[in-house]
Image 1 (spheres, rainbow, N blue to C red):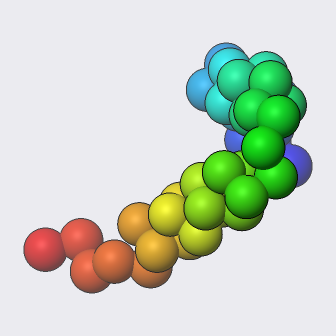
Image 2: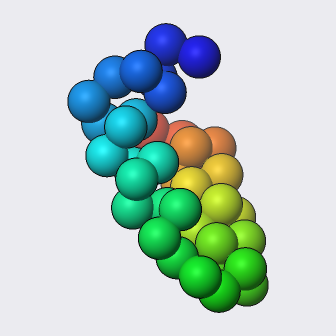
Length: 41
């Protein structure tokens, strides 16, 4: 919840809601999830 109020969170949220294609939004969510679960080596 803290992230949503941060400058980065607000910027991402504003850009994300402008994406009209639901498939593209889903792919972005999947991409972010995969990046967040990567090993930080």
